[in-house]
Length: 176
Image (cartoon, rainbow, N blue to C red; front, side, top):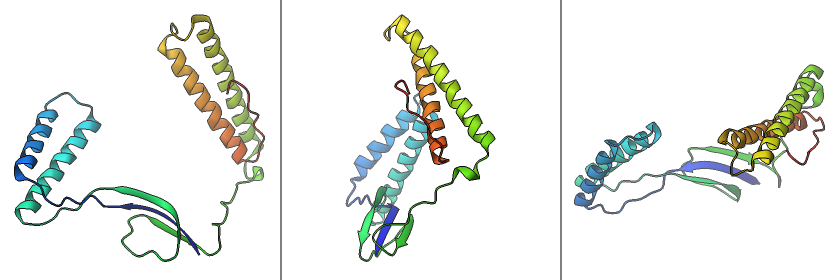
């Protein structure tokens, strides 16, 4: 029996924390909060401060704080025992069953034509940006050219993935 595990496990064990060190870390993080920061960084700092304060409380009570995150995935042959906060899928046999493919018959011909038109439009856009980059040189091309090339290639990739998922042939071109 093969078991595919995808799990998030809380792991980081702190054995002993010096109260002075915790205080210094909290003061430093609170000082950092007074700086102009992106919201994501600010939220992370506030979470870190809260975690340090919880460790302080645990230390004063003589408790060991356990926290953290580890992502675990793989194949297990045998039994798994423990706490699982993720997903466990069990399959009897050596390999999990293949995912059902959506056939082209499930998709309307209009949707396929629309996706092909969109793919062609992304390729035309890419050609324009590549000509601009060739004319200016990559060192002198404005940032919009590089971003346009990346966006066009992302659109091409998405279009080809969709068409292939529907069972429709999508040719790979050199500039894609």
